[in-house]
Amino acid sequence: MPRAVVTGGAGFIGSHLVDRLLAEGWQVVVIDNLITGSLHNLRHHEGNPALEFILHDVRQPFMVEGAVDYVFHLAATASPVDFIKRPLETLTVGSYGTEHALELALAKGAKFLFTSTSEVYGDPLVHPQSEDYWGNVNPIGVRGVYDESKRYAESLVMAYHRYKGADTRIVRVFNTYGERMRLDDGRVVPNFIRQALTGEPITVYGDGRQTRSFCYVSDLIEGLWRMAHTDYHLPVNLGNPDERTILEFAQLIQQLSGSTSPIVFREFLTPDDPHRRRPDITRAKSLLDWEPQVPLEEGLRRTIDDFRRRLNA
Image (cartoon, rainbow, N blue to C red; front, side, top):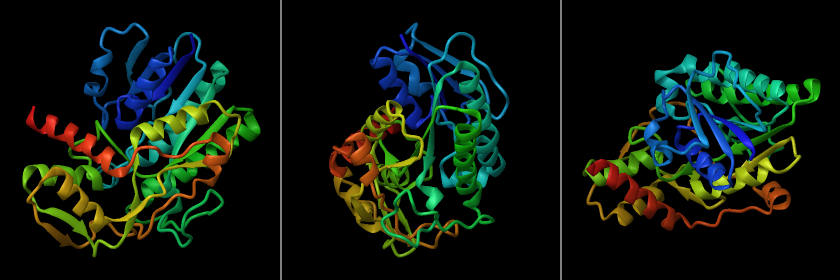
């Protein structure tokens, strides 16, 4: 029975990865400090002897007893709200946290997968964004603490691969949504859905013409699973190339939720917000035989239902 360590495994994406690993018959050790994660995301596995939870901040060194076959490093503060509230944590989980996770993988002779982000491309000057594009990032901007921590972490992962022989993989995750997102996450999907369901105005920042490409979480997890079973070491984009404007997205959530909330326009909360975002997934298609399967409308219905249940709990 393979055994994996998942840092950030109590978070949104991390907990869905834990679901998949357990369903595939793996033993899983979750390491999380619960700053942005929640044990609620794992409670459906309560009593499962294949799951172990360790409360720990990966910015501090750590070791796990026993054999480890795989280290999945997902720990991060990934919301713009967190960039402002926790800038130092954001920087150091990407730097120290990644180094400590890599050291665990080396010590155990384990494979390693790092979830990077589309934010390494910054506010892109190339569209769509392929893995060969180096990005357009403001290193001293408010968003820089996240963007640069992930860019540094990618460099660190490749250095461990090239100079220490670590068996590594890098996935650049584009905007992902689905059940278990934090209600107060601050990103587009939870903001719009929460506002729509509570009757608050749906706030669109800027003119609403900026674009995003939203990938449903089950599609992302399938991509991570396939990537974990390759021997490819360079970055691979995982995301949905179905590009929508933010205004169009707000209108769709308004419609699917049956909300009467008005759409209002506000100035940008943070500078350097990307104006366009769409992944080029040519590499994922050829390498992993992967592309998203869940249409946006279907994924949003599931997510809205999940938010409605939690808001009414």
